[in-house]
Amino acid sequence: MSKHNLTLLTDFYELTMMQGYFKYKNNDRVIFDVFYRENPSGSGYAICAGLEQIIEYINSLSFTEEDIEYFRSLKIFDEDFLEYLRGFRFTGDIYAVPEGTVVFPMEPLLKVIAPIMEAQLIETALLNIINHQSLIATKASRVVYAAGGQPVMEFGLRRAQGPDAGTLGARAAIIGGCIGTSNVLSAKLYDLPALGTHAHSWIMSYDDELTAFRKYAELYPHNTTLLVDTYDTLRSGVPNAIKVFKELREAGRLPEKYGIRLDSGDLAYLSKKARKMLDEAGFKDATITASSDLDEYIIDSLKAQGAKIDSWGVGTKLITSKDWPAFGGVYKLAAVWKGGRFIPKIKLSENQWKITNPGNKKIIRVYEKESGKVKADLIALADEVFSPDKPLLLFDPHATWKKTLLQPGTYTLRELMVPVFLSGKCVYSSPSVMEIREYCMKEQDSLWDECRRLVNPHIVYVDLSHKLYNMKTRLLNKLTDNVKGL
Image (tube, rainbow, N blue to C red; front, side):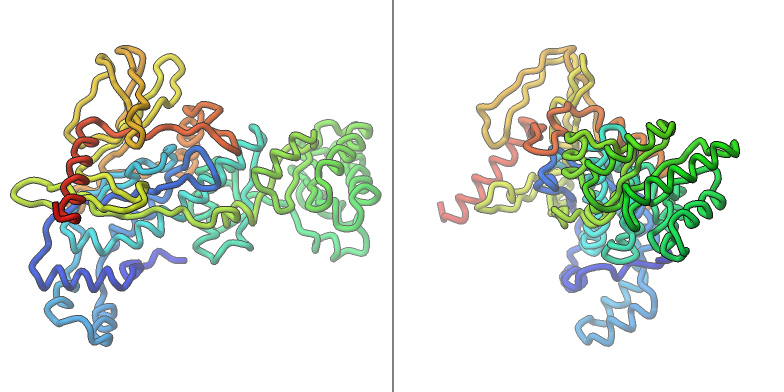
């Protein structure tokens, strides 16, 4: 879990390809794009995350003598290639969408412009980092949306797929909108609020529940939340919690923050009954927190049933993104430098969603000026210039008859990708995680409510510029004609 060198965090074929490029003196500059094809969990959007870890990875990219010896022991790499690796450093450019940005399928989240050996090596690690954190940040944003403004706490460490997934997953969950985490290591590393109460074992370690509650309230007089479902929620847990709250009130020590937590049973029924009991005892400001294998769908259902829950602790289904376990980001070659310019490259497929977008590209976000909401995203070539003072024709690249003409002055534009590395030097400073969270919340507010529905959301269109669309069409026609022998 320490910040160790992750250069060998790569697939073996990246290294075998590197040796091939080295042997055939092919180290041309290339462009690779990182993008994904489908929003996770049936969402109408995704949240991009992981850039800070990518920066750390690129900055520490180098092969140690121990690495070189390991490669030599495999008896597949030649000595001249191993000597090249000994002095390896990343010298290229990286452009990326800032963490916390709302993103959509097929648009580049990150662009690498570098000698092909360097660009090839970093493929696996970039995908590993972006895929995981973007997945968890997206899942968290959905859970937070379902909570409807009520606080959501990330409680998933013990069910995460290992220490790294738990720690970086907690970071991503905060970016997606959670207010804090139970993961102390993540809280320390990324300056996040560390949150939590106590377990059933605290209650069970005492002879009776009431004594356990009293001791906990004595130990934490400023924030007393009592877990009430160890034995019997309504006949034991809530009544004993009320007794402790009464004692604190009579002693003039009732904390500003106090309440109960429900971790099992029918949360809608129990929360409504508990709320009634607390209110009748004069504790209307006592909060009710719920945990117990929650996700966005369960929270949405509980709220529809009128559950009296004020905050949510979400664990397993958030930290593992249980219903959608992989983000599906890919890394594809888009252009190769030849003859003083980048030559666009395209990958063919019988599946239209697997046909790549060629060339050196950028993303332009189009907002409706009146509302400030996202109208569409436009993937364009890097040298194209657009002005909101001119008409803008958008069209669906898969169904070109679907067109929208935006009149001058009715829309605004924003270019999404920013430079992160230039000539191997980092030129970007990552904000704090809590700052990224604040930015991410604003990003989500730029979406129409219809785009944030948990089920069957409205789809934000990602269109191609006319220039890029025409380039793609020419390449497709040329390649398919060659394949058919025309």
